[in-house]
Length: 498
Image (cartoon, rainbow, N blue to C red; front, side, top):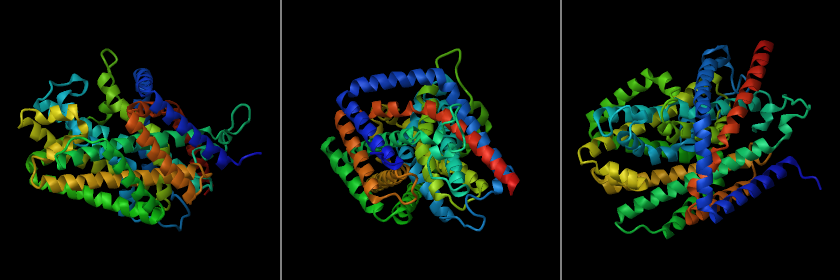
């Protein structure tokens, strides 16, 4: 019996995810060690490739936006945007990197404050604090969105302007290998994208569950209880199921708007009740340093000394965003119909990074101020238990209980939105690019991600699985370049023909 492509992709992806999860649960220490060592080897030998590639992605996107191609609309000329600007931007942020931003937004500046980038300053000094904000802005700025924006733009163009499926493999329809076998027949591209997305979301879900659990522990002043992990995960799954049955235009849309409103409310409250002048000065100085050193930071390595800092932060982040680019890019393409290329690029590359930098600027600057005035207590806590650090910081602020509760809800909503958008996209990928994937597949993927997360939380395989998924960034980097080549050929051809 010959199965259609959609079944092959779906069954193969499910099987691979189950096997990888089982391996991570059965041999967590070995997987963590092996994948960690492999990732370090890849980072040390190909870190330069990630740096130059992401920088090229940024330059290429801005070129497209500012060139004559920027006026081209993703879809028919008479079509309007599928979503309003506020909703569109909220969905971008919530489904993209919202959970990671809450997890690292306050803690990352503290890490750089204690161990400054490239040893450019002595730890816990004024210069170290300045570098901490500068490099945190850089790591979460324009570059963070470049790979997903490029993949999303390419998929959107082929999907809405050339009638292709919303799949990575469909971009290669007209490219042939030397053996004249069309690349799009190799469904492995779509399978890799699905597996990396599922594993990545499962690990992010696990980190979010740990942070919510830490918040509950701090609020009710009790010991950490791992059994709460299952309750939290079950609550997220139930909320996801309610959201998934309402569809993209209701569930993800309203969850994203809620996340954005909550995020802005938390930032505003901390700005007003915290060291306002210090925060504002830090943000302005950080933006200035970021813009002034944009190219230098983009291409900086340490050929003569240890490159450990870059491998642990910037290169790790770039590998992570490349690995996530099929999922985030496909989701961005799905919600961007009716936008011009110029609107797409400026919207994706500028607005979410600006919000991310404001979040880091407010929370990170507050953390630096508190740590410098409390004998380094907060920095010690961040390094020992990052999941509870933000809630401990809130203890020094007015109405800490309310602030911590709202932040936990924000993390919860971000996790539900990420799970909902991820299952929607992997269902689309495993359903031959369908714009309305079956609820059955969305349910299966939701269950599989949640079960994988629970197994790995119980067995301790989250870190190893995360490292293993990021290794896929190396081949994906090459694939994205081929996608860009195919895209430019079609863009140039279509532009000249019109």
